[in-house]
Length: 166
Image 1 (spheres, rainbow, N blue to C red):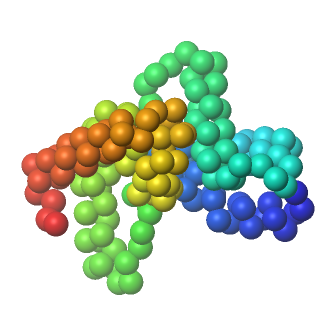
Image 2: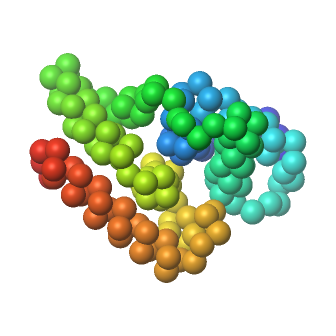
């Protein structure tokens, strides 16, 4: 791969990979390190004619996270949760309202089971199709659809219970 291609891939796929990894590890610094390691790992191992880069990148991020867990022998995620910085409004008032809505959404997503949260992040933040999510999670498309339905239903119920307005 040429440097220009790597730079284009980085610009295009960093944010979805970072958000996905952040949803797994719940630690901004660790997520940045894992994504950077994943890009380096893929840069060193890919030729120009491989399967879709985003799939490989997300799979590598997940594998690096699992490796980290094995090394650390811990399953308790950190309390630092910077996913709130996803979107900005135009005015301070809009930003405040947006932050409140994102805060409610964020806290509800954190309370979802990890498998449901992972599917929602892959679909909505990494913009993967259900077929790609199934391939990434090594599941059938039907089971991913079912898990997506349950995750949405559970998230909607939590949001309604917390006064979130649709």
